[in-house]
Amino acid sequence: MQNLVLILITVATAFLLTAGCTSVIPDDPVIPNNSSSVQSPGPTMTLPPGQSVVIQVNEKDTSYAKISVIFSGGEGQVATKDILVRVTRPDGVVLIGHLNPVKGDELILQGSRDTDRIEVFVTMNTGVTYKVIDRHLPYRTRG
Image (cartoon, rainbow, N blue to C red; front, side, top):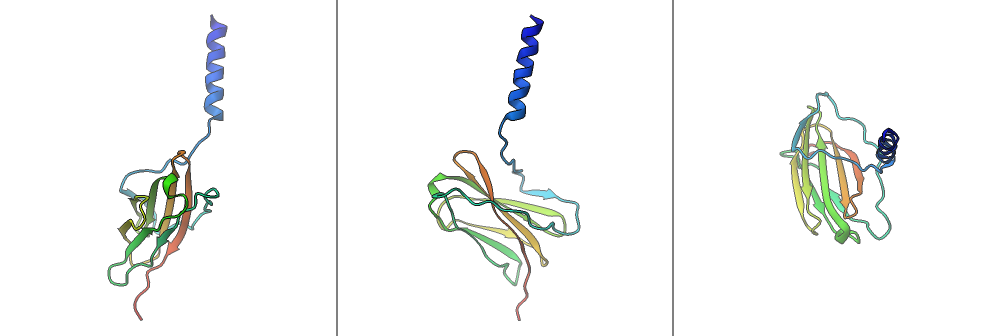
């Protein structure tokens, strides 16, 4: 009996250690970061062939520093489950919003009058999440 329990525990542990992991992205709208500047952008991933989507990140508006992100469609539109947009400001505030995979859907987030970091994560119907955009978004004044 003890051998059976030991075998079951070993098998369960093996399954847990070899299980595939996907990115877990927090769903809270504002997360304090407690840092004085934004981190450098990291690597991004390319969506599988035939599942590409187009996400347009516009420059901040020069009056209010608002950031506009627009879903422009693509071959993978029908296979897209969710689009998460995360903006990290230098004051440590992290803003999170979601775009619907509907052509023309727009999300507007409040940026800072400094350089922010914007990340866009696309989750497919398979449950796999891809970071497709990760870059700095500077504030530009008119002139």
